[in-house]
Length: 191
Image (tube, rainbow, N blue to C red; front, side):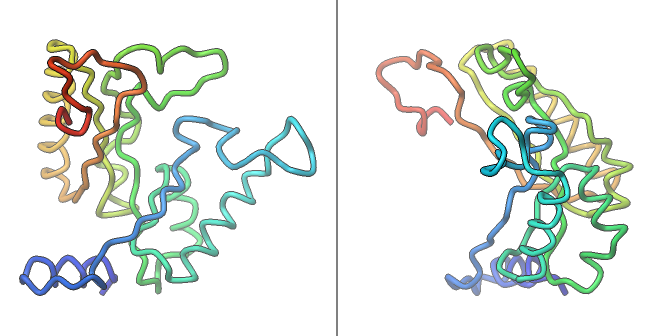
């Protein structure tokens, strides 16, 4: 049984201990940054390390057993699953199931200056063949119509995930800019 499921069972049974804290490694940067996702190459200024370096970092972290969940893009998860990386591992592969506009980092793009909009590239029916859990993220911007649209998209996603027996965990991002909260409220209270 994957360590994630053991920890969740312990938590659900009311037997939580600090050892049940769930640790995830987010290696899904290729969703927002594309080719620039791995890291800048220290030996070659202005270039990035090869994709293979990114994949090898995922392999090494998974094999170390230091994490419970390895979060990846659908394409990375598919590739490493085909290699058998997770076959005998206690680490649970997870897929980023949506890619809201606030993580889009296209060269020259200005998406982060605008309120986040929902968007899904990964299809739950296809992702489910690779992993049984994924991440859904949402960012609220204190703009009623946009926030309602994003919340409705999450509701539709939950129905899609349930129909395909895809578990998920929710991440709520802080907005990338001041959202003009009323009466001096802090962002934590708003979220």
